Amino acid sequence: MAMGKAMTQVLGRMLTSHQDDGLGVALDVFCIALSVALLPTGLGVLGAVGLFGGVVLLGTDSWAYALELGGNDEQAEAFKTQTERYRLIATVMTLPDVAYGGVKLVKELAEVRELRAVDRVTAEAATSMSARTSNAARAERLRQVAERANLRAQLRSEQIAAGLKLEASGKLGGAGSVALLVREEWQNDQSMLHQFLRILQVHCIAVHS
Amino acid sequence: MSVRPSPWYLLTLSLGCAGLTFLGIGLGGALIGQAGGDPVDALSVDGVMMFLVGFAILFASRLIFWPQASASIRGIVRFAIVAIFILGVLGSLAGLVLSWQLPATLKNASAPFYFSVLALICQAGSLLWITRYRREGV
Image (cartoon, rainbow over all chains, first blue to last red; front, top):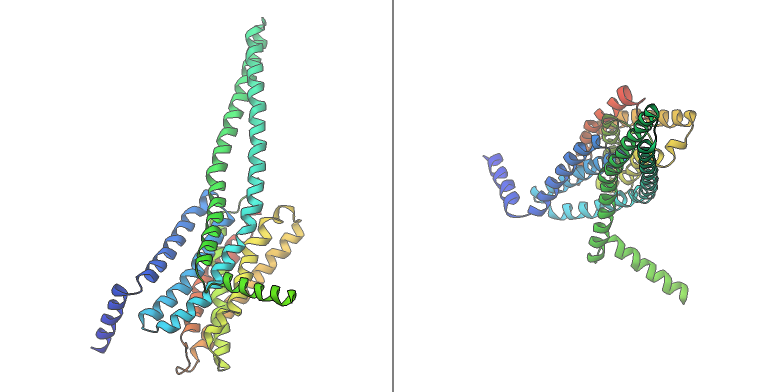
């Protein structure tokens, strides 16, 4: 009887209040599923980092949600402020990958594009030479050269498309999460960023005087 | 382009790293609780430290310097990760036992137990990594 009453209370709290936290937990589960789905596509270490962060966030968020459903709102709030630094660290730690990986990606893509241009020139030259030559065997050889160069250029095009689709999307995701965090921190007056700026301000004034 | 580790390698490694974070919160909280403090305080010190260790394992060593590292350095890093993971499994068990013995009157007494259980669940990933996927992914 008492158990049934407690269950009704918990269900009531779940349906009436704390819906945003329930949504947060659901989003964490979604993020984990997305990371697992993305791991084989070539996102690589960034996907693994997403999974790692998602699992940690699910663990901490679900505990805060459980506290809220149990009716300990104050404890849940205290718990949530303590987990804020995890989000901050997780987001900042992806920055090296976004910066280093981004530069590397742009360089690699430029290289592949150059090689593709060389292949195309080779293919054109071989085609025109095979059209002009009178020796049939030689013309056939040149046609084969042109064909191979065309194939290579096509492969490089596919490589560029895959690089843009898989790698650049991961880097964009990382950059987007950093932007979201900064925006959230900026709007929240009690956030760690504001506290840090305040401390910095105090230090600046102290040094100045 | 460098050789990519397989999805299973990354999956088990990241689960093991998440287990390390939960271990920090669970075992740290149990120890703080045994000393009479608030177990949730472990979240801001021990948990963050293990979170950073997890990140270091998963991310920093493999990302920028890994292709340049020599075979012996790679062997040492791999051995260090294995050692940390084995300690993590043992630590999760210790955290479970210690948090089970916390007095029920303590504030937030059940938090370390919850996080120790989460840590043990995630240690399945680290055990799999040690036994099956350790040699993969350059």
